[in-house]
Image 1 (spheres, rainbow, N blue to C red):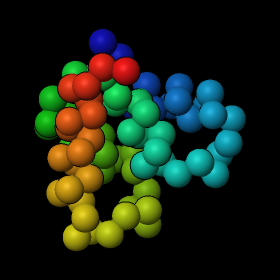
Image 2: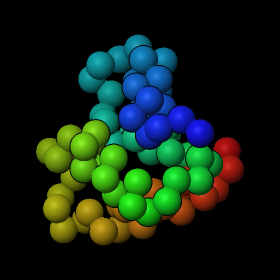
Image 3: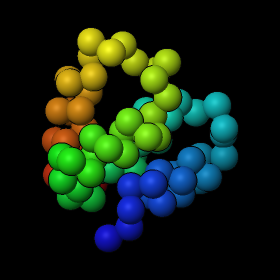
Image 4: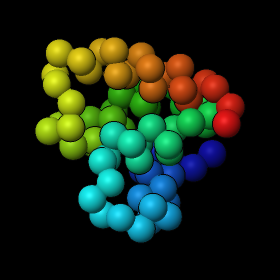
Length: 73
């Protein structure tokens, strides 16, 4: 299994647009990959630009991403 960071960079490179929101790239990178909650949370804080979401929405976003990582493409 690739690391979330590696997968994130691949998605961002394939998009070919540096202005693509990091939250969208992160979401695509974790889709169906089966990452655990701890790894997902740590990578989220490292890779996703904090200006792209409200801090109050963080828990909901992480719950949705956790469901997304368990769901196949």
